[in-house]
Every structure is written in C-alpha cells, then in structure tokens.
Image 1 (cartoon, helix red, strand yellow):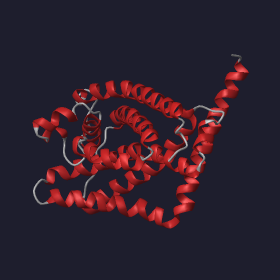
Image 2 (image 1 turned 60 degrees about the horizontal axis):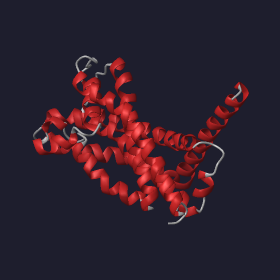
Image 3 (image 1 turned 180 degrees about the vertical axis):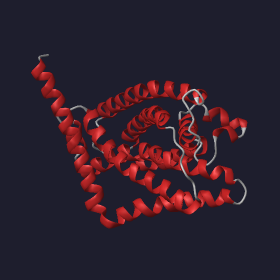
Length: 270
C-alpha cells in the first residue's frame, strides 16, 4: 500500500471517529437538554453522599477510599452501558446495518462513541471529587506520575469488558438489560464501596479474577497516599496483565459474536 493510500485510510478513520463523537455529543446534549446537564451534576452527588454517609457512622477511614473509587467507577459504568446501548438504539432506528457497512473500520466509530462517553465521564468524576471535598472534606494527595501510568492501564482493562458486552448485546438484542444484569456483580466484586481485601474469602477469589479491584486499589493509593509505582506493584502488575490481555479478548469476542449475528441474518432485527 502506498503512502498516500495509508494517509487516506488514516484520514478516513479519524474523520469517522470525529463524526461519531460529534453526533453522540449532539444527541446527548440537544436531545436531553438541561435535564441531561442536571443529571451530570446531581446524580454523582447523591451517589457519593449515600455511600459516604453509610460509612461516616462507623468506618470514617473508608470515606476517602469510597469517594475516589466511585469516581473511578464512573468509567466502568460507561464501559458497561455505552457502546452496547448505542448499538441497540441504532438497531431500533433501522440504521445499524448502514453503520456496519460504512467505509471505515468498526474501531473508528466505536472509538468516537467511546470518546463521547469519556468526556461525559470526566465531568461526572470531577463533580464527584468536588462534592467529596465540599461535603466530606476529602482532599486528594496524588502522585501524578503514578496516576499517569495506572489510569491508562485501568481504561485499557475496561476496553475488553466493553467490547465483550457489546458483542453479547448484539446477540441478545437487549444491551440495557444485560448491563443491568452484570453491573451489580461488578460493583460487588470491583472494590467500589470497599477494598477487595476486605471482602470475604469466597468473594475475594472471583474478585481477583477481574481487573477492577486492582485498578481501584492502584488509583485510590495513588490519589490519596502519593503511592509510588513500587509501593503498588502488587496491584500494578496484575493490572498491567489485564491491560494487555483484556482488549485482545474483547476484540476477538466482539468479532466472533458479530460474525455469528451476520450468519443468522439478525443484525438489524430487534
């Protein structure tokens, strides 16, 4: 392939991702309007307030952990719900087939959709951390260098979960129901409301088979205790492994499930 062809292909992919991002931003902002902005502000505040008030009576030491972990959990929430539900909506509109036949890779428009999710999630995360400071006096003492390593690894580990659930959603045609089914298990085992180390042994075993607890431990330690990479290596190394393996598994799973739906001729059926 010539250089011009490669450049043209890259340009097409970037334009597709950008178009998907713009479309999703307009849909979320203009379709839902002010109510959507209110949801950005108030729902995160209520979420952390409920959790923090539960611990304020007995385990005040967990309040900072819970607030930071719930802020990080916003990205897990987006991974579980976003792309799969977007595919469902495209199917209901009758545009999913056209989307899959677009002259660009699946990755381009999925990255665009995910980019919109990241933008929204950053706002939610900022609101949560600000509310934690104002309402409960939780201050961050971050090691920026550690977070710069840990956070991208955490996001990469979520990629495989998002792609796999999106693929299963293509088969089941009900991504929202699937997301609602799995999210309580991820919250229970993911170290969101309490460290995985404090789970009962029989729950700790399956929790350690997921990247979530390692990510939460690393992010909270780096955000609250200025932890260095060496100090969190017990969580960092497994998280690194998940960051490498998870996207590969997700891509393979999504492609396999997409081909299954295509063979059945069900890609546009709801």
